[in-house]
Image (cartoon, rainbow over all chains, first blue to last red; front, side, top):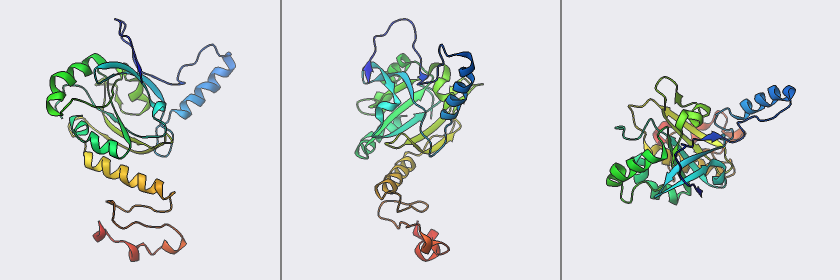
Length: 85
Length: 150
């Protein structure tokens, strides 16, 4: 995990390989289909990789899911900080 | 989240890294940890608290609620190859059962360690009966295992 300097612009998470840039027009559609395919979440399939900002023990860091390859990962989404459950 | 943080040591002993994700910024995560969670769990949250502002991650993982603008309670167990082995999604008012997450991780680790030769029946816990799938087991599971073995 890489420590990030924090400015006023608020960074957000993004899927790795999710953006399409400067592709020849005819290849774009093909590429889109590929990305969509690889981004389906299903048991038995690869977890879509992402990179996102995080708070980790006093520091602001950048977390990339694929950095944890070789280890088991428990990925928990929840509705929000300061909620009750 | 505090329930997961409280059992972090057990996850570590199983070689599991925990990542939590909500649409709150990493700054809000810090304040929530400092002001509240660190009072519920000694030392505060020991794992990275990811910010999913805009729900980009939640959308791909199928847990982003567009109307509410939040990620609902989705829990994914990912193996060392990066493959999703389990997922569970709950609406917000009901919390998770951390025991069940730990039980499932132990079961998936057992299956992986046996190269897939052994399967774990319903409610399996370490030390309980396992099944060895193969031609002889077809139609004969009842000889090896019944719900009373849970």
